[in-house]
Image (cartoon, rainbow, N blue to C red):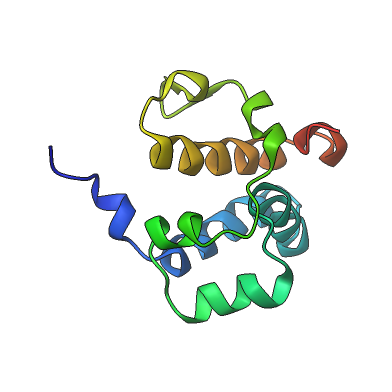
Length: 116
């Protein structure tokens, strides 16, 4: 089976869309970055380096310093699919991030988004 095309897309090409979605709802780039830091373990310098290098999604998640063990608490629907039911590991990681950004844009408290 052919890999999904999003795997080879650069994270840098999608990142501005995450930020724009949040900013349209009165949230900030810093909050988007906080979510990415929580999920992946990247610090700001490493995140900026991944964006500058135009790393694809596959590499972005493969190189993540430490995926948050609490990410399996992320439940819900993204693009009509329940994230907890996605079997492909990389697609599940991508959808976890999508779900967290959706929650931020909907005004959910950061403490709840980060499963604290």
